Length: 156
Ligand SMILES: CC(C)(COP(=O)(O)OP(=O)(O)OC[C@H]1O[C@@H](n2cnc3c(N)ncnc32)[C@H](O)[C@@H]1OP(=O)(O)O)[C@@H](O)C(=O)NCCC(=O)NCCS
Image (tube, rainbow, N blue to C red; front, top):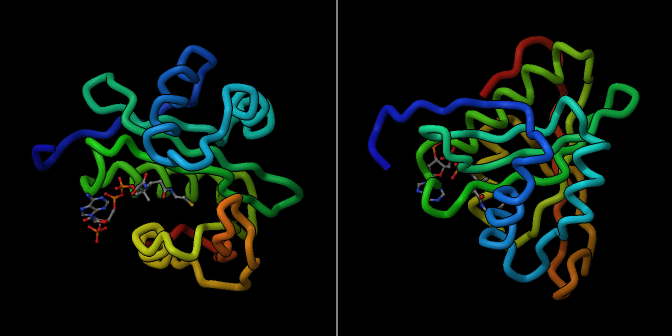
């Protein structure tokens, strides 16, 4: 993608879910979330389910749940054709700002232990490993639990 591309972040709408599902399938070919799961996430994540658009085309999504001050990033993915250009960072930054404004104190997530790119990505945003869950994923891969606090404005 060309440099200085503009990312537009918007609330995910039901009409976006078809494209979200496409990105999901391209990003997690092993165990993609289903359409039903996304419908549930749309209800559960509410104002913290965002899509990122590049020239009006949806390039990625992030779904985060907030419960009693503790948030969990349930899923984030960027279309492979749009990766490495800042779309993921733009979505995560936006989410952290909104969570902080809503009074969230911490954000957690689970990531495959072999997903080094994603672990690096989260570390840059201040997420630190707090645990490991053996054979968490269907193919036997371990899950790494990561967490960061949200005191004050989100730092990258
Ligand atoms: C993790 C993910 C959401 C990051 O989205 P992204 O838009 O590629 O992220 P960004 O471009 O903001 O940042 C990625 C970093 O990797 C670098 N990068 C370079 N080429 C890249 C590429 N082809 N793919 C991914 N990252 C790349 C970027 O330069 C950037 O580093 P920087 O912040 O130091 O500049 C995306 O890689 C993805 O969808 N992965 C598959 C799904 C996944 O693993 N989700 C997380 C599951 S927990």
